Length: 420
Ligand code: AVJ
Ligand code: FE
Image (tube, rainbow, N blue to C red):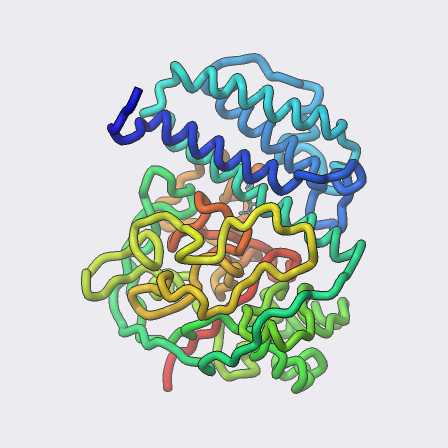
């Protein structure tokens, strides 16, 4: 039977769940038991835990809360719930076979439930579940990357090393910005839409590249307190880092964004060049504001969701080697924002100067611990997305957050400044 009508909401949700899951499974295609349970860094749970937690979260919200089912494996609730055990106690895991079975059992029941579920009134929750799995998929990729880095720090293959235009910046005139997002798929922390006035500022056309960052390293950046804040210098003294976590001193990557820096390193580099990090509002305005049209865009390039044409995202299953999966920062001309800024979504997450806080009128969804627990004036906001970020978790308004010392995530930054 040929149908040419637009897909129903149920089909759309079904398809997103399915696509999202294919990507999650692709990440762990050839995983072994050791890698499944390994915890290469204390801030990150093992891959197997994330998989169980994805299944648990989907079962809890859709099967228990919506469909009224009994818990599937009550004995695993404490292990796989978000607020159950400290991260270092998440290493005693059931077998891979069990975890995969758990994922598919939950999914089978979820799809059965979807047949009759009142989807119109539950759309937000279903979309949350897709984004939840998307985000844990990225964390799985980070854990795999860290583990393989430990196991075999192999050489990077060569990329072409044509020079690119040197640093350029875009002027953003003073004015009002409508910040945030109240679409059905917006997370609690993106809401509500609100107006925000920004003074004139300049923001870099590209994220800071490895080539630029090398100058900081070579100028003794990691040895001179003068570029660092007090907190940053304290942090550095305790850790003795000399370069970003995912640094490779390969000139053929000079046009790629620097990746694997903490917020403190980003801050120090900005001081070194006499600039600063953008606030999250400045980042969002440069990404979304279409001055001529007088409105904001969902994505820098417009309204079509991210594709490999517009940005470097969703590249799953390639994380088997230590090759950087970044691309040159000027690669995606079709992804440029209305203001003329490149490479905003995908490639690397970008640190901003802002602390993670709720917007005015914040209401948690679906649980306090998704965002509100982190409104502690300690976490910094990241914007944009990385090469591994799934398309459901990427838009101009999307907010990510981590402590300023975290450098294991796929994050870089871009610089901004206030006056000439
Ligand atoms: C937004 C990536 C910091 O992984 O802790 C997943 C996303 N929240 N499950 C995290 C999240 C609940 C969150 N980050
Ligand atoms: Fe979670």
